[in-house]
Every structure is written in C-alpha cells, then in structure tokens.
Image (cartoon, rainbow, N blue to C red; front, side, top):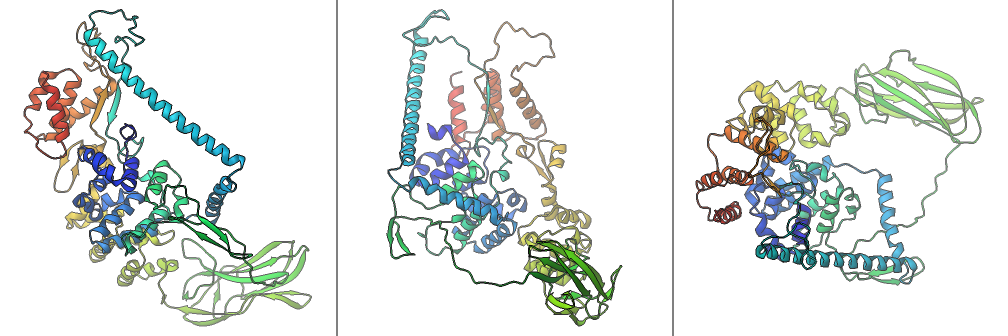
Length: 625
C-alpha cells in the first residue's frame, strides 16, 4: 500500500537498488503496463533498444538530467558500448556546475557536525534523538492501524448498503457512518513519473549538474570488478531536492546497519579506524606550512588581450603581433603606514604605444595602508620576435624598494599552442582545419564563456558545416542555430528532422498529431496526456441545464481534457489501440456505455504487450453491461 501511495521514479529506483527481489516481483510487472513511458521506465524494464535511442538521438539525449545520463552510461557499459559511454561522461564533466570552495567547505563542515550527537552515547542529545525516533515510529504505526481500521469500517458500510432498503441520511448503524454522504470533488489522475511532478518534461530541473552524478558515471566506465562498491564523498552536493537525495542514497553502497567502526589510538597524533562495512570518512586536520617572508610593499606586472570578449590579466605564454594589449603595473602597500613613492613603468621593448600611453612614464603615488594602486598602459607589437619587458620599479628617496619580475615576451604571428584561453584567436585565423582540430580536442561546452556566435559566420561553408555538425553529433552536443543551417543547404534530411523536432512552438502551431518525412508531432509533445477522474458523478435525470450552450460534461477539467482529445482524434487518419481504449474510458466517465462498448469491440484481443492490463480491466468492467 505504501509503494502504491508514493509510487514514483524515486521510490522505484530506491527499491531497485536496495531490494531487487521485491522490485522484480512486485514493482516491475506493473511498470510494463504504463502508457506514458519515459527514460526511467525503460531503465526499470531493461528496454535496451529504447535506452539506446537516448544515446543516438541528440534531442532525446538533451532532455535527460544528470542522474538519467549517469544511468544511461551504466546501461551502455553493461551492453559493451564503452566508447559512447566515455563521450557522455566527458560531456557531463564539461557541463557540470562547479561548486565554489566556500560552498564545499560549508557542506563539509555540516557533514562533520552530524557526528556531534554521536560523540557521547550517554549524552542528553543522543537520548533525545532516540526518543524522537521512537516517537516517530509509534506515530507511523498508529496511523497505519487507523488506516486499516477505516478500511474495515468502509467494507462493513458497503456490506450494509447491499442489505439495507431505506435508511435516513442521519441514521448510524453500529457506529458506522451512513452510506448516503457526499462523494467530494472529482480529482484528476495521471500516470506518475517523478514525485509530485505532473509535467513529464519537467525532469531536468529535478537534478542539479553536480560532481556526484559524474562520479557514478565514471565509476561505471572504470569499474573492472563487478562487486566493487560505489562510494563518493560528493554526495554532499546532491542535496538540493528530494529526487537528488533519494537517488544518492540509492546509489551509494552503504550499509543500513548502525554499526560503530572500531577506533584505536596508535600514538599522540594518529589513530586506526576499522570498519565493519563500507564507510566514507570526512576529516579535517591542521598541517604545518612553509614560511614565506614578504617585504612591506609588493609589485607585479600583468597583461591582457584587449580584443577578447572577456578581459583577464595574466602573463600569457605568447603574444600575437598586431593585437592590442594592455599591461597593468600593480603596487600593494601591506603595512599599517601610509607610503609615498615613485613608480616607473614602460611598455615592452619593440612595442608601439597606443592611446595616451607613453614609452616610459614616472608617477608619484601616495598609498594608504593596506591599499593597492595600478597603472595601465596600451600597446601592440608590429612584428613577431622576443622582446624584453623591463620591471616596474618602486623607489623611495632614490632607492628601489620593490620591483616586478623582468620577463621576455614571445610575440608570434599565430598561436602555436591551442588552449581554452585563446579559442577566439584560433577562430579569427579562419583556418577551418585548425578550428575543427581545436574543437575536436576541446568541445565548445567545455570552454569557459564560449559564445557560439564566433562560429556561426563560418557555417555557410557547406564543407565546414558538415564537418562541424558531425563533430558536435559525436560529442553529443546539440546547438539549434548550427542545426538550422541544414535548411540553408537542403540536403541533410536527418539534420533537418533533428532541428524541426526540437522546436516546441512549431509543434504546438501544427496541432496535436502530425506525421511527415521531416517532422513528427505526438500528443505528448504538445502536453496531451491520458487522464482519469475519480470520484465522478453525472446527472442522470432532471437535468437543470440553463441553455443549450452549456456543456453536457459539468466537470470543467474532464470537459477540457475530452475536448482536446476529440480534436486530436479528428487530426488522425486512423486510430490505434491506445486511442480506442482512451476514448472508451472517457465515454464511460460520461455514462455513455453503449458508445463505449461500440468503440471497445473494435479493438482486437490483446494477448500480451504494454496495454494488456488496461484491455483486460476494461473488458471485465464492460462485461457488467
């Protein structure tokens, strides 16, 4: 009963991982009869053919959250598809949301603090925890007992209703409430997927892109021993939503037995820990560090490429000729006193100054305690070569007290090294072979602050576009604008199909059902679902309808659902078995039994398959008529 009440992907996944025998015997047989199957349903049913579609179809792959992608990797490895699994793992690493060290430290300290209640077995905190645990257990037991009692009373009430002739609406029988009572408002039901998530396509936001799911995918790819346990301390990042928490608990190979590990001190600063089962150890320690003496004033000199979208100051390995650069001399006063000094700066040897910059400049500066001052210069190199950058000098009363490091700057015509930092420069060369080689080594989504607009201008070259889109397809990356160029060339039918099938607005405009060589629209694509309603009572006599414009179906939700479904049927040339069963059910909800039977008898007998349960149930129900 509890499994039925909380039926969801999360609960089914937990049972599959922690009680496989119960899952195979009770849960799995019911899942095969679901009408609206999603990735998790195919995973539970081990439908390898359907799962592989998510690896081959970029649109389907892009609809998966990180938990689902990790489970896809698991199934690919089980079926000897390690090459595809490795690509998906790499895409997951590149698209992950990297947590800051501050966030990690907060979560880490939270985990450490959880042991506070276990520090002393006789402490008040431990006793209160145990008392609270017992209280919760007793409450759950009481609720279940009351629920069983209520079910018994309901059955007795139904039996009395069969034997009774006339009773007053206020009469009580043996303490049982009368059978004449309000049924309550009709509720709308649909097949469950994620817990309390009515929208099938709302799965992505249920799981954040954290390192924990990457760890599991990597565990599946690199595992050599079948009995090797999965343990990851990054579970602390999978805590934002209920779905993440349950999935993380399901995946971790930790014991549910509350066994204390053996602890033995082996010296003044060491100890031995012996675990009776799998554990994850979180610890914090203080280490001695090397001493580094600094003067009371610091100086440094950094550079930035002014032609890049994101300007970052650093010391690059190479400079491009005929590119605008800026240098920044930075001076920091780390004393408690105000300092007055002279700063001498100059642009690199062989460079030409730009804007208001001079070849050499001296400036008197008064710097407050614990403050920083910087002086910026602009220049470019007219030709390649190796040029000296003389250090920025800080002097007080004619004596140099601090200076930056002298360096030799390597100026080249084009970069010899390809890295994340200079992808714009690689693209700006226009060398398409080098650009493709660059993206083959570093996928676009792995590059920080990457902008697709830098590539779009080259996509009118059909040869480059074909090679680029093939590369993206291999890397499991879908980018709508890149795929839209398939309409420009009008040759690659497969790419056109992929592009059209990702435009949800287009599908909504077309309707609820459409099939063609280039585009297919299914009911689920535009939000049409199979829904049920209970309890539902219809007027059978003495209709009090005020006008003919008033709908015959008085339940507003059912009226809208039925109307949308009928419009969907009108758009189809022929109806399949699912359509006939659904239409029969909606007619039964309206007490239009004869029409329901007329539709149902047209369905060929279903001896096996996903809809056998629904067919047998409806056949048994209509046999009463």
